[in-house]
Amino acid sequence: MLEILEIAVLFIIALLIVIKAADIFVDNVLKVGTALGVSQVLLGITAVAMGTSLPEYGSALISSLSSTEGMGLGLVIGSNIWNLAGILGISAVITGYIEADEKFIKRDGLMAVLVGVILFCIMFAVLLTSSDIVSKIGSVIMIAVFFYYLRILIKDQKKEIREFESIKEKTAKNKDTIEKIDENIPEIEEVIDRNKKTLDKKNILYVILAIISIIIGCELLVHSTRELAAVFAIPEMMMGLFLLAITTSFPELVIAVTSARKGLHGMAIGSIVGTAAFNILIGIGIPAFVVTMPVNPLSLYFDAPYMIAVYALTIILVKYNGMKLTRLTGIFLISLYILYVVLRIFFIT
Amino acid sequence: MYKKVLVPIMGNFSEDLAEHAIDLIDGRDVDLFVVYVIDGSVPFLTPKNIKKAMAIELKKRGKCFLEEFENILNLSENKNISLEKILTEGKPAEEIVRIAKEKCIDVIVMGTGKSIVDKHLLGSVSDEVVHFAPCTILLVRTIENKACENPNS
Image 1 (cartoon, rainbow over the protein chains, first blue to last red):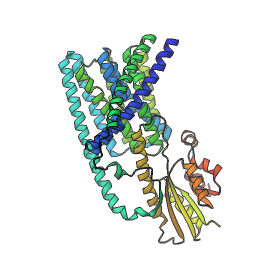
Image 2 (cartoon, each protein chain N blue to C red):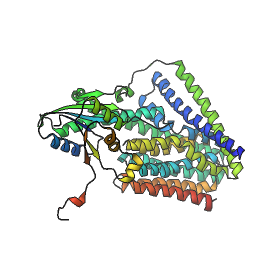
Image 3 (cartoon, rainbow over the protein chains, first blue to last red):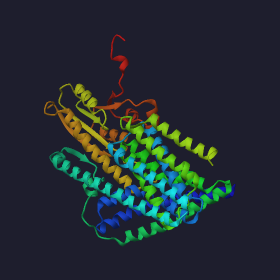
Image 4 (cartoon, rainbow over the protein chains, first blue to last red):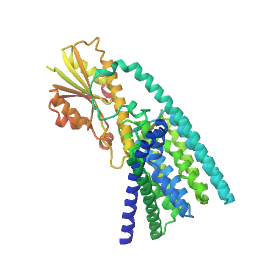
């Protein structure tokens, strides 16, 4: 009993370290990037989309490097199913509804489905051949798709900034009419400030320390997960699918629920759907280049198709519900996740 | 009777609120304060950049909602109204009560109408304001009461 408690405490501490270190990492990378003249648009997109997923990427990479049971692959697929069915469902139930825009369907949603299908094909090829070359080719394809998707996101973001600036010019005359504004919150134009800032060595040090903390934290996270798997005699793959997937998605859960409660529906849905494709392309794409992707047949024939089905169903639900995820559809999504857990634990093992 | 009116807005039902405020004012000369509170509170472990992004987005929306409310009021027609727009950050209920005290408000006109489920899951700003406001409050029902639409039913 004491042993289980010790491992559980270690797991929680490791999780907190990874989440906090990821936050510090993103914050300081943004500052270093700005000082080096990297595009604010690129920094903004990657920081928001990838920042919250760093715990998943780190744990997936470390478990892929040290596991043969596909814990890393399970973690990413499990995390994506949890993010979409679980987190989005919970957010819709709590807030009553989440509105989505056309971009959700046409860009992020379809990209998530497409990336899911690409992953399925690569997994199939790897399982069939067990070849390191196939894994590497798959990795290169995924990384190439990642850059293509990033390019689309940057293009859209630039367009949004241009639109914002033209609206700002039109409404400039009205700017003084607001009597009192809290000055602690920056304006959007401060955030898209293109001026280079001076490079602070402290930020570089924080980036390095954060990377070290993420590596140590993820190592501890994967280690304690393995220990728990051994104690409870549960396959490592299952631990990746559920325990690691749910816990490393904690930042996404917080962001989705909080932003939906504040009426920031775009941010709520974007933080989940937007990162779904990134999770696969980076979380599986990079480890697959370093080590041969350990494909479990169950992942190929059940988990991956289930994930793609959840993506597709979410898009259909939103599209045919007036571009909204209602409380009822939220309950349906949560039920989909519960069904997945029940099937995976009791029937498809 | 009411010389200083406070209207807290959250983006939805601005037309209803403006309509009720104008009806209450009834052509008298009043100072109307419209407030949008940026709720910047976030749970533990929310990434710093996301917190900042949320605050920026809420500020942008707040400005839009205040402008929208001004347009709905149509000040060129309602010249008796002297409008002051306030954009502030904090806990909505606390900020509304604070502004009401600071500006010596006579009446607050605000929306209410969440379902029981929503009240439990999301909480209610109007509930809190009702308990702590230093003045009269006119709660504008934002849920349609269809049963009372037809007087014969």
